[in-house]
Amino acid sequence: MAKESAVELEVGHRTVRVSNPDRVYFPARGETKLDLVNYYLSVGDGIVRALRDRPCMMHRFPKGLAGEKVHQKRVPNGAPPWLETVRVDFPSGRHAYELCVTELASVIWAVQMSTVEFHPWNSRRADTERPDEWRIDLDPMPECGFDTVRRVAHVAHEVLDELGAVGWPKTSGGAGMHIYVRIEPRWEFSEVRRAALAFAREVERRAPDVVTTTWWRKDRDPSTLFVDYNQNARDHTIASAYSVRGVPEAVVSTPITWDEIDDVEPRECTIATVPARFAKLGDLHAGIDDAVYSLDTLLEWADRDGLE
Image 1 (cartoon, rainbow, N blue to C red):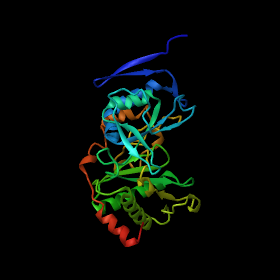
Image 2 (image 1 turned 45 degrees about the vertical axis):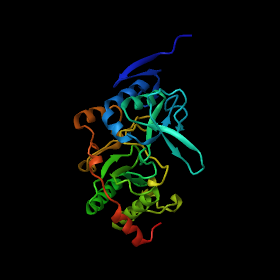
Image 3 (image 1 turned 180 degrees about the vertical axis):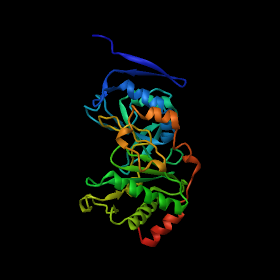
Image 4 (image 1 turned 120 degrees about the horizontal axis):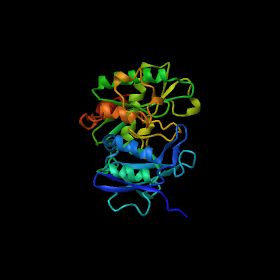
């Protein structure tokens, strides 16, 4: 039997072996595992900044997008000794040592392990129980078009400006949009979620015809947009900035500027197009760690509204 094909890549001061580099991962255009590796290398500063020091779930596709999807929390046996992990504990009493990216080689190792999507926690290993990232998830229902997502993003921006918070928008890689806000790691998940709900309710008040905060999906109008505050609950994760999504077209969750909200076409942000964009613009989330917000006002709103 022929020896399995592989390439060895120098990533920083590490050597990472990539097996089956020619395996087609994305059938829509034929991009391979090596194309995926090269994409993550091209946005290296951005993906490392998005993942750095966070517990990270890996969404793996061992046979490419045509095969089974594996949600992997635990780093498997046999990982290289330099790969860093962080312990997270679950309500069941169980625990896991999850990937903790500290360098680009960690990302490329994960891709070698067939990871396509990276889903980090919104807390870091210094204190996994106190998030430093508030996530605003604009999640459209099936009959809600992207023009509505654009409109609600502007409303969210307006509220953030009034709060004195800096929001960092990105396409979700799906039908919606995400906005991240760096926060002081003072509060536990339940309080960050309360603050997120208070914000969502304010957005709903300003655009009641298109926004909902109704929790049960079956009770929502299919033409509305759900501001998903529960993405801030413990152990909930969403695809990071620069994460490729597990779809045949290799769409990327892509940082954008507020000025791009009205023009961005999320399906055009792929592993084929984002590298050139990154080379031209750099990491549009590069300043996120320098814009830290306190949740005090939002928690006052939550108290005012009797939110739990």
